[in-house]
Amino acid sequence: MDDENTVFIGSKETMNYVMAVLEQFNRGSDEIVIKARGRAISKAVDVAEITKNRFMEAADITNIFTDTEELDDEGGGSTNVSSIEITMENQE
Image (tube, rainbow, N blue to C red; front, side):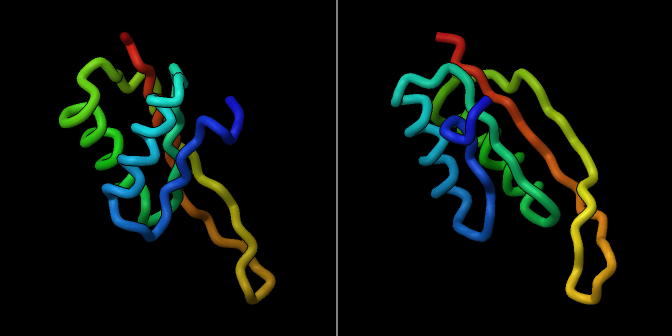
């Protein structure tokens, strides 16, 4: 999976990311990965569910992968941050 078919969730409004997912599907992608870390995880779940339930009933969530990533912090130490990858496929 390349970054072209990946939507990274950040601080924008949820519907901005829903539109990004829909745009990828409309460009012909059969599979999209929604990625988020930390507090954005709940927004990633919302994006996948809104896309599936309101806009693309033919899209299915085919995989959910959770992980913990170790990030360097400003003090020279490290912090653990949860991450999620939600894979959606267009079943049409």
